[in-house]
Amino acid sequence: MKVAIVAGPPTSGKTTVIRQVIRRLKESGTRTAYLKIDVQYADEDETIRAEFGIPTKKVYSGDLCPDHCNVIVLGDALEWAQKAGAEVLFVETAGLCLRCSPYINNAVGIVVLEATSGMNLPRKIGPMLSLADIAVVTKIDLISQAEREVFRANIMAAAKADIVETDALHGINTDRIARWVAQSADVGGELLLRGSPPVGTCTICVGKKEIGKEAHFGVLRTLDSDLFYRGE
Amino acid sequence: MQKESNIESIAVIGGRGRDGAPEPLASIELKMGDVVSIVGPTGSGKTAFINDIELLADANTPSRRRVLINGRPASDFSGSNSKHPIALITQHTNFLSDLPVHRFLRMHADIRQSDKGESVVQETLDFANQLTGEPIIETIGMTELSGGQTRALLLADAVVIGNSPIILLDEIENAGIHRTKALELLHGFQKIFVFVTHDPRIALLSDRRVVMKNGAMQKVICVEADERRAAQEIKKLDDLILELRAIIRNGDRVGAALLEERLHAIGYQNGVKP
Ligand SMILES: Nc1ncnc2c1ncn2[C@@H]1O[C@H](COP(=O)(O)OP(=O)(O)OP(=O)(O)O)[C@@H](O)[C@H]1O
Ligand SMILES: Nc1nc2c(ncn2[C@@H]2O[C@H](COP(=O)(O)OP(=O)(O)O)[C@@H](O)[C@H]2O)c(=O)[nH]1
Ligand SMILES: [Mg+2]
Ligand SMILES: [Mg+2]
Ligand SMILES: [Zn+2]
Image (cartoon, rainbow over all chains, first blue to last red):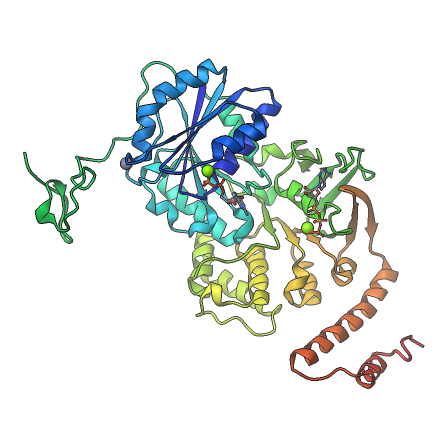
């Protein structure tokens, strides 16, 4: 089975792009499945099931980083999609944590960025972009040629990804994504995250609410210093 | 830059209309230097037609059209990280950056044509300022430009800095830029311009026009000498309409006497040309 992991900020057009790609794969007779990982609300699983009649599922990551949640549930998800008879599994993840990235070896990693989010976005999102295979730029119908080209240049400076610019509402250029996914390798063997997860355990993550470095331990920093470590 | 400057022509091979029947016009070829309009009623498929070109369609859109570049399948040209040879300015296209005009254009110029940044920026501003009423102030933010100034600069930037060989424009007439001047300037570039338009002035100042109906290309009409003469008259009438618009904008009245007088001034009596 092939897996495509699709990450990107909210409203960047992930679902719209995935629907275009599923439509194209379906036309060529490929069986797909869809998993949505979100923090607290999502209905894409229902709309995609209604539209294409394919197996879909969602999980809420709740207090977990959605990227971490992805790591934990993906094993089960592969099994589920396999049993459901899918040849390609799409995973849509919120990608809210800009230090992590959800991509795994063998699976196609796709980041979806909206061209309307400002020309400097590619510089701000770290491994979600730099570790992706394909950077899909949506909403090019809304911005000038000039901004589109600057956005593209900024992506090329931050990542080696193949760039696909699209008006996803009209499915412009989404053929290329479908072809890439269809021709990708099957996932197999030991599945590993591509990136290194961020350093350390964070005391805020485990529930300490006090403000100021004095109250915390682990990997810390002051306003002006670099990272340092306090504790065992 | 290397590949795209080699483009000599594009061809659209007809597919099927909204009813599934083959398009009456089997194909159309556009050559460098061509200015072509796409006309037809609302919903007739004009925007879909230029979207097909932008997409370098390969029988993979609802119309099943195919686009050829220099007679070959366009897929040869849509390589991954090379620049797309087509600029599309839709009715929704806008500048979103709040950088000052000059800084923004310079940034784009440095990415596109690193050797002659400043001179292409000036060329772009000169081009845009010939199309607008009020000249563009270089130091204001891009998002502070008026609607017409924005359209003018979108076009100028795509033509001069972007230097795209194929430029597609969807209904730019509503923006209030100087259309005659625009067409005159664009005819001086060795590019392909495709205007989706409802505006007789733009249609008649083009070289040819494709007529759309029910999602399908119906026919091509070449603009001939007689239509060019008619275009001169339409220009006068259109300018009169613009003048009336300006009068109303200024808070003044447009009476029958004024209209009569203005028509007379451009050679019409009792609504007809003697
Ligand atoms: N050949 C075709 N086959 C199937 N659908 C088509 C075809 N051509 C156009 N359509 C669809 O018809 C609808 C109307 O077309 P389009 O938006 O291109 O019209 P238009 O001429 O640009 O109208 P307007 O003047 O209002 O902008 C769109 O949804 C478009 O996708
Ligand atoms: N104009 C335009 N709108 C788009 C495009 N892609 C997505 N949208 C719209 O953007 C909104 C968010 O898209 P969605 O796919 O739900 O984003 P997600 O949160 O990343 O899954 C929806 O209203 C889409 O219709 C595009 O290329 N152009
Ligand atoms: Mg979504
Ligand atoms: Mg239209
Ligand atoms: Zn994280």
